[in-house]
Image (cartoon, rainbow, N blue to C red; front, side, top):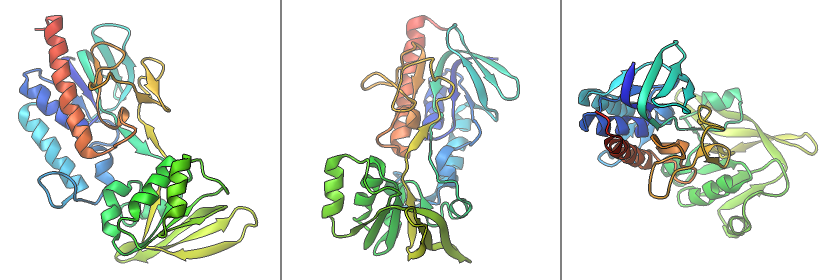
Length: 311
């Protein structure tokens, strides 16, 4: 199968790229991947998407998928396992054994939050456990929350959460933070933030009906003692991993795998391949910015194809 534009990934960036590419009569094919809809499918209330005061994350992605289909995007339920970029047209090979050639490619495979791997963490995801303070901090007005981590992400999340929560406890398994000095100074000078050193989270405690976080169990890594802490929410802030396995060592990346794009552009180091959304964005990681980049990628792909004289 051949397409003028092959979109890999189905979050806000992928679906938006599909809408714009379809409206440009490029007849795009979109391969949805392992998690159709991306990270928003494991989010509950979304209150920062323009046009909706509140919408469930999965519902938003169902709407975006339907919109893409209505414009003519061909959506394929499959997962790309290999991408051949040293040839033209490009070639994508999927888990089901299909081969897709393409004149241009839009990478929209996103990123995944790093998690601790606790069963209780998985149980309460979306019900008091989050990896995005910007997304979910609003729900913790006048409540107690904890942040897990010791780098810039954890420090920034903790500081941001003080806008809403009465008390923020930052828990780190070491006795020093990896965060930049200026962030450390802001942490220690904020009266709402308490630092708990040399501790690690071992279990998240909560209610069953309705499902919700009520506290956590932590262990002192120096003496092995355990204790429980009351809280209403847990924010795991130990970083994100871009889903860029297909292009590692094939194009320019930075900071652990984020795809490098030209300034004010979605163009990658390989002409004809564009990157949009969290796969290239280590800073904002928001659905609305991902959608905006999806729009940019489709417009730039259209321009590229026009310059190449593609029919």
